[in-house]
Amino acid sequence: MRFSYPPADYGYATVVALSLIAVTGIGLLLQRRIIRTASYAAITGRGYRVAPILLGRWRWVAVAILGAYMVATILLPYGVMMLASFQAYWTQEFTAFTLDNYRSVFTRGLLVRATENSLLLAVFGACVATALAACIAYVVQRSRAPGRSWLDFMATIPIGIPGMVLGVALLWAWIAVPLEIYGTIWILLIAYITRFLPFGVRNVSAALTQVGDELESAARVSGATQWRTAVTITLPLVRNNVLSSWVIYFIEFLKELNMSVLLYSFGSVVIPVVIFDLYTEGRYPEVAALAVGLSVLILVVLAISSRFFRIRISPLG
Image (cartoon, rainbow, N blue to C red):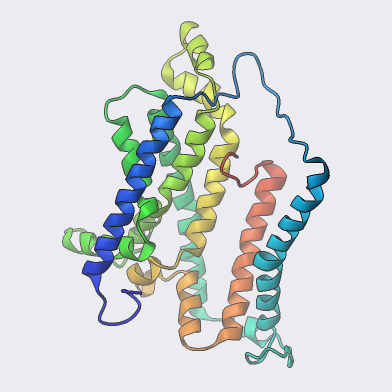
């Protein structure tokens, strides 16, 4: 709210952000202390098997709760959004259906540039972020490198920083640097990776904690280097988590708004910014039409990843 209404109180927002960072840091320290005193290895040299949890008579209660959740958070809002996208003007009576909103939105020249930028950031940025997250997670969980705890802390701390505050921080930082990055698509790439890097780091780290050390130890005893062990032994075992991290990054980069609206320029406009501009102009049916198009793109990516790579988007892969 301190950013939403002028004059923007950046000092107050920064204090709140630092408080959130402190809370996040305490949580990370507690997590590391708990993990050190317990073993979560589920994949060992002896093999493993996933055992389902039988709910018995409670399965119908679980189905009812999940069904109510899906209706309230997915079916109802997305259904209303889809109906609104076919209206000539915003009304709760759902009359005067038309395709003009889709025709108007998808023939805008600005949307072409925004789509190109969004897809470039989502695809290329997801690849860079996934590789970086996997490397950080491996160093933290498998190496004895000095400072790995600080590396884990620095990679995870953006969770505690609101996107708007992080966007302002990056804005100030890169304006002061004598490099022509501000106003380009590259500052958006840096912002996205910085903001969402913790997602992949925690995702891959969770998978690595379930892989027993004896597998890598056996490979090292057999003469394999640490690099070969990581590529041929560890990576295949956490492949699903690495791929799911890529999908998560793709989706988050594609729909990020808070930082984008602060850091974009005319040449680096992205789809969420176009949606935001339409919303501020009060063109709600067109907002719904463009949001439906973006949702369809995300669903296609999820369907492809589920069908061909057989991965699930969840914290544990």
